Length: 137
Image 1 (tube, rainbow, N blue to C red):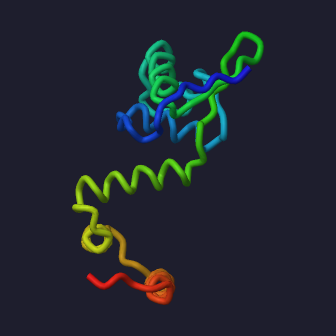
Image 2 (image 1 turned 30 degrees about the horizontal axis):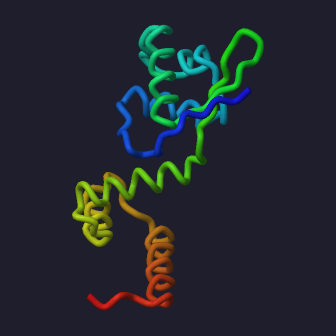
């Protein structure tokens, strides 16, 4: 039996702990409350983990199956879809919807120097975007 709560993914922002839980579940594809508890550094109590899992179910980020006496939790959408949705929200909220401002902030705040290969790969992505047709602003 799989239960999926009906909620629009990405409507409710995740707390730090909720994000940690989602990271554990995405890393393995599925997890029990005990798995989550064991894989979070400085984890809260087991009962807090269970409460947070219920919140993530209610927000529509997780679904579960009952296997014997335990519940196994799964993400409701692939990491790529969730990360894309979260990134769009960040771009809208913090960068006025501007991809240019977002990239500039990433480049300005990078604690690592980018390699030539990384810069070349980004240049290639920009060239591909140009070839698809740029909007005239």
